[in-house]
Image 1 (cartoon, rainbow, N blue to C red):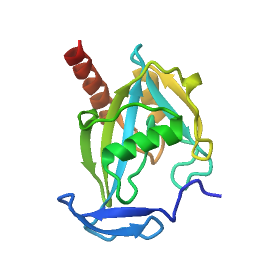
Image 2 (spheres, rainbow, N blue to C red):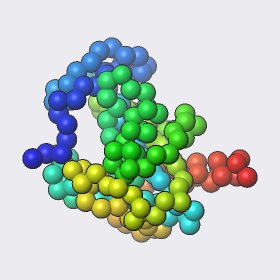
Image 3 (spheres, rainbow, N blue to C red):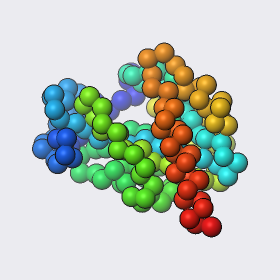
Image 4 (cartoon, rainbow, N blue to C red):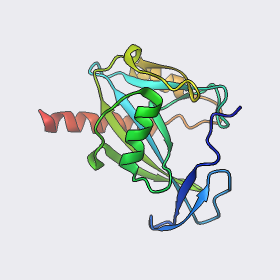
Length: 176
């Protein structure tokens, strides 16, 4: 059985991020319309990044390594609320999420991806993973993370990971 929730509802947006409707996930998004997705890279104080290995039951890219956390924004949610929910659901992690944590909005063919970056001192062993969607999580140095993310047919997130690390570095200097 697939781990994806095909009966959930998404808000649908135009290119200007104006809400133009709502539909169930199971239905294809029409040309020129988009649904929202949130993704994040989470770093520990040592500068390692948390990656998740997707469940073999996922419809898309089962058994592949992926960013730290991510998922679809459901109808009525903001990207910050969706990011907080996804971290809680997938990792049991309760980190505050602010608009400043969002470092990139990236349009694709039928979705717009909102990228976030976070830092936590939680070890991977302290996380409670959602086994319906994930097999495991682990921290990797940036070089090893890039290698794990190079998979046939799946986005290696090279630029997104580099930008997330730069975002964390910039914000840790501001906070100091």
